[in-house]
Image (cartoon, rainbow, N blue to C red; front, side, top):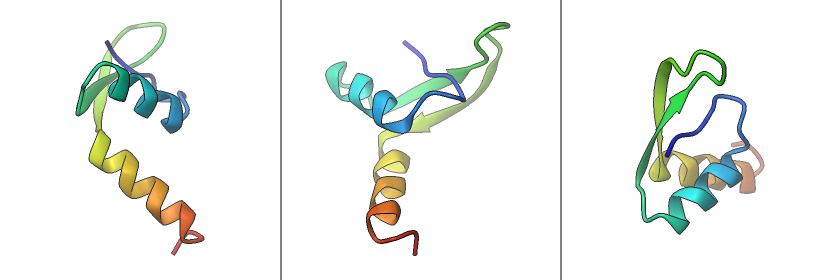
Length: 55
């Protein structure tokens, strides 16, 4: 299971939650090259910042 750089974070978090994952690799769609990883903690922090108005 992986995510892509252009995937919405909410979609990635939902798939991570459904599959009990705390980290997911990010791959380029065409080349399938590893470009990084995203953690559920990072997503939750981003959502929290956005909920506070970006502060």
